[in-house]
Image (cartoon, rainbow, N blue to C red):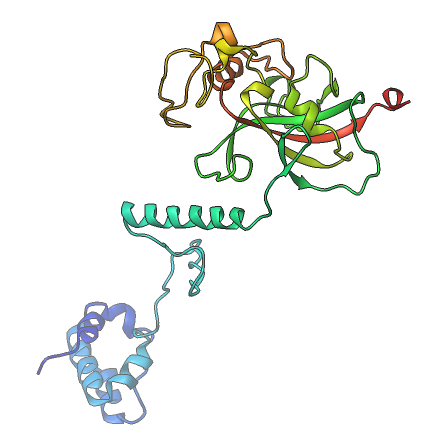
Length: 305
């Protein structure tokens, strides 16, 4: 007869198990035989006969060898049950599936942007989109001295209108991204006068009409930004001048025309980056369409009177 594995385990550990062993009352003759055994060998034989004479469950419960073991290592909490549809479950299993999901999510964002109303346009043709409206009745106008926070952005390849959607920061002030701010957003702002000759025309045109506390994205065409005027610098698609040799911007805009930096980059127009790395980025972007994301912080009360 083949013995169950747990019985071999009991026999192997007999001295320890026997101390806590209780012979069932249903086998009194075996109890007297076990108690009268004079040595361990006889006791083992009696012990085995007791195990085989009662149901396995009774024997196991008497000794306690089939008690459920601890399933977890102490100190390690079990993982929470995963719910169907939870964000923690893996959504893709290979590079192709992950790329497909990413493209699908990006397309959904573009579709949501396309559902937005078209950008507003000023009387001079500057396009803008109101991101945050304000109920303030203090409105900026030409000649006002204002304080603004801004981010000069380059629109991403998925932005269908050149204003909405993702964009990368070229330089900024007031958002904690400039080295002078030490990571503290709101610590600094840019003070300027709307319509001043040093301010780029796109901001003079786009900030006019903003309420204090509002945030607006303003499109900056090269000729309304940091590119100098004149036929020699008008080298973009449909432009009248050469503007330099045709080069491919392989990151942002394919076949974008790059004009000569020294001849056409107006470094005297404001706002302008202080950091050298940001200046170099601007030197590569000044002849492309950019975006200014502007928050109107305040209007100088003296300038209004």
